[in-house]
Image (cartoon, rainbow, N blue to C red; front, side, top):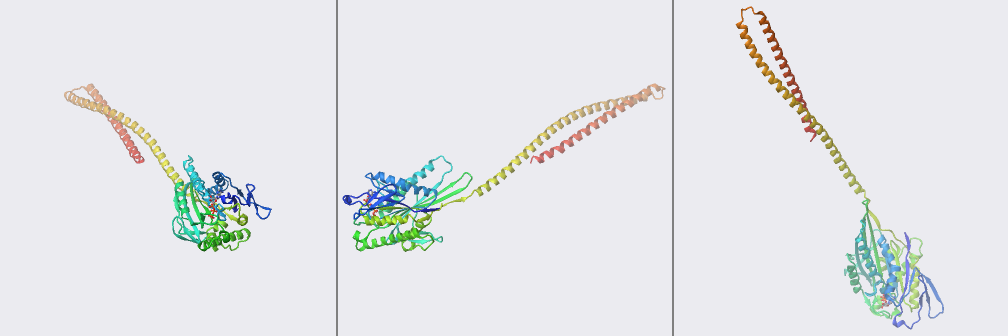
Length: 482
Ligand SMILES: Nc1ncnc2c1ncn2[C@@H]1O[C@H](COP(=O)(O)OP(=O)(O)OP(=O)(O)O)[C@@H](O)[C@H]1O
């Protein structure tokens, strides 16, 4: 997405020394400022994205300026855009006041840190199951006399270019921060290590460009198993003040400092001017100064960038120079991209779920098989019980017949003996009638005996069949139950 660098002008409150001076700048509305020379009776009106004046209520001014201008860049960063806010202006125009402020009247950087952790805490306390996991890091370095110094790690670093043409500070230490107090402690530690000196307009003038960076990483898993990652950085920059050597009456070491500051700021001006005017890709001289080399992406690449032009109320030349710079910056376009991507589109989770489903389906069909076997077993058991009953009945019947048969056979034998005796005693006698009757009786006994025998063998074969039926069923049931 193509964006223009947003430009806000902030007019500093006149100092005690300036209380009787001619005021050259007047904020006319939220978006316009008039600049008037004390030599001419005419003024020029300039329009910007935002114009802020001052009041006696410094606390409210600081709070309003943050809310109206800077908060938006925290929100962009939370959405996954790289953002950058840099304060530009002559020495003593209010850059440090705007960016860092004081403990009582904090500026943009501590307010943004505070709000970032408030947002993170709100997410973590919410009942919402799907919220991002935050990882927050910070680093702080300064560029002084064209060299880069890590304000937290203490070492000197070099600016390098990656294969994708973006630049980074090699060896810069990044610190994990988990609480707002930690990040504020790093900020204060870095501020206290910055190179400061006195200028004609500022007792505590920052002589270096200070770049505080917050890296935010957010990871969230959607209910469908997608893992989204958003990475963004917020660069908050308090530039050293521009100054004219004559005006600041500097000499010696301060003159060298001043000329280095001016060199990097004039390179910044050149880069901004070329970015603003060129419609086609041309070679932009980022490498000409450490500051522009570090800010390559923020000025012409993947970033939503805001310039705060701080102006003093009584210095026409410096104020006009800053306003011209700011006007040019408004035409610079960057191409911020959402640094958000899916670490996983849920395909793996779907695969896992699918194989879990298959396992469950297998287990279910096994349960169903078991249930079917159970039903069969139940039927077999019933059949067994029925067969056992029948066998029992047939066996008792057989036993009963067998007893009868034994009894009958016994009687038969006795009768046969008796008849044998009778036949012997009447041998020779002409008792033909009696013999015939005896023969008849004997025949009947034999018939009765063989009927009983037939019955018994019938019963025995039925019992055999039933036994074999039962044994054929029982092993089958045992096999299926395994
Ligand atoms: N809007 C404001 N309201 C009240 N006081 C302000 C305001 N802006 C700046 N000041 C005061 O003006 C003085 C100079 O401001 P500051 O140090 O922020 O300037 P600077 O641009 O950072 O200067 P340098 O480039 O020299 O570091 C400080 O005492 C600061 O408190």
